[in-house]
Image (cartoon, rainbow, N blue to C red; front, side):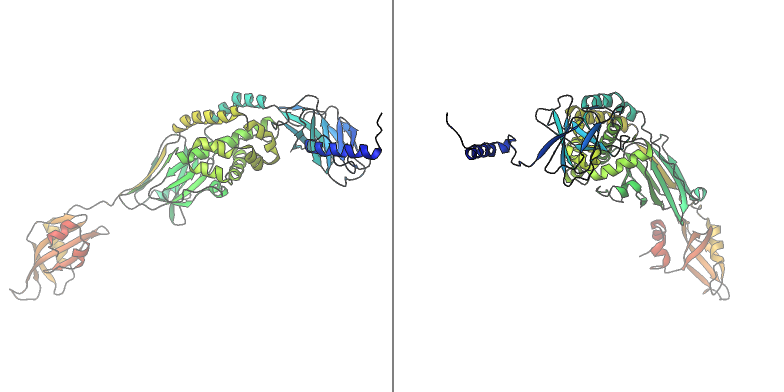
Length: 499
């Protein structure tokens, strides 16, 4: 029988391992130690700390809901701090897919939590979950029950959102509301529950303050009103491409916006809301975030996403998602299908939600959930359209125009004119022409203290109403280029033959 030397055997082993290292068949690091430390945990490291051990806990409930424990919760301790990161390998009590992201490892400083998640590397045979760490604490591998989460979502989430379209917005208040309605101003509005509003005077300006009561953004057109404050949410959504402060603004849920009001007599201004394509894209982004926050609640990894606090958290996550060019472009394109695909990839979910995104990423990757986003949102859109339209109308009455003065009134007005020499007698020789508070007539006037015939003067007299009284604007024969010809309405200008 052929004999082989130890050197030859070692050389052949080296060749074989060099071929197998790339596929994990041999380790090229002969100093690495694999040690079972109890509770189904194996540690892989070049330098194991002294006294390293794992103790399985009894009577510890799963740290999260809607997840399946794949091994007991274990406390891993040592007498000294690890000198380098350790690879922890957990033996799983049931085979698990290695490539779908459904297995995570929860860790905490104590059995009472709080727990956070780290991504798990699952072996190809599905029997082991691995993680690398330099921190020893409580650990437990878990599998997210995607199917249960989706079923629970379909059973309750859509019904909960559609049943609570009116949000908990705060009714705005305005100072000096009675004063705002003086000087001919009046205000009316729709009767549905889309907006809260108030109308007042603050800082010597009339203002209209509105609040969106619904659970989704609205687009508001406001011709005749100037944006004074766009609202807190718009300020927090720094990544959002604004529509600007011209004649359209966005009203987000719970948020308030302020407008200054300066309406000319006889004119009006208005604010009207609608469910626009741009608002629809933002509403879909908001709805998707709320769906994911609701799932986190079901996993036990987040507070309920209801009310003002829940919406505050929604805004923060929306802003994070909008930092990605793909998501921001999808929202601006008002293509609601692109919002789903461009804003809710697993990578974006993990970046926006932090460690909790590890729970959500495999759920979002399920095609049925993406389709749920799409179909549910389309159904919501039909419902939203019935609630989105609302109008606030502000009107200001024009001045009450006086009736046209008759000949006797014109004669009295002319005689009262403080001319020199004094006008002693005035006789209207034509019909009186009136237009918009102005009046004119041909008048002959007798001047006091001048002998006839030179004390008779003829010409046009033009008067207008000011502060409730008729007063003379011009008296004379040649009025071309005078105040009356520059300012009078067309009918009066024609009567006095302006050039």
